[in-house]
Length: 295
View 1: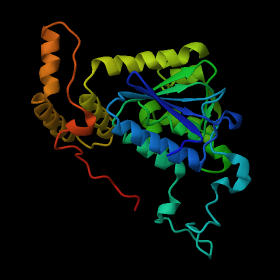
View 2: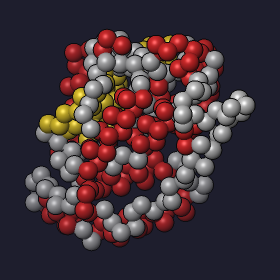
View 3: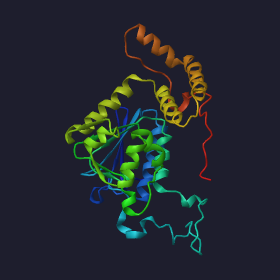
View 4: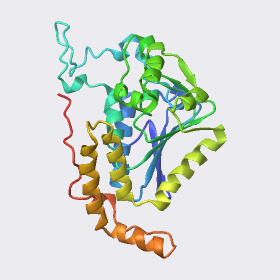
């Protein structure tokens, strides 16, 4: 795919995905969604990528949905694939009824590589909810966050009703979403939405240092499995479900070249060079879940 609204660069094992519509404050469009999904597909397929950093060009991270269409931006009527029937009723089961923010956040959720957000400025609407399935979020001192949907007459999107309470707690999630007010970086830090706050010039360096710690020290297949184990474990009803999965993981990974290398590197007091790759080394029980359909 030829990118028009994002940039994708790989250097030293780290992919940097930059939202690149600075004149529009990196406002989210269908085109941007398609390019970001493609970029995550590329990262997962590339064994040279050990981690992904997502940031924005210019003074914003993402100002939310592109509102240039006015009130029609949230109205799915009129197109040839519209889920709005001629009588005004809605075909909720139509694949075209799916929220564009959720299509992105679900793709990020499925990532096999760790995802770090470097929030360089305002992150509003989908700009805030796309952060939620990312694993670690760092913010610039000038970052602002807004779950502003109720102030626009709609509701939270991007599957944020699942992600946000798990990250910040139900009471804080309700407060932020029902009020729709903007949050400063320090409030986001206190609420555990972000890991740390940095001077603007230090933000990307901090994100890269964190990515470097993962890329340089951890086995990529183990990282991919760990990411999915912890995220998907949030929906498990009993710890026995987790026990079944981690037992498979210990058995399968314990027989791997990565495990042998990890032990020998420790004993020999040297850095490990893990031989297995995500593209070819995932164990035979992966994936252990059945992916739900939209309907």
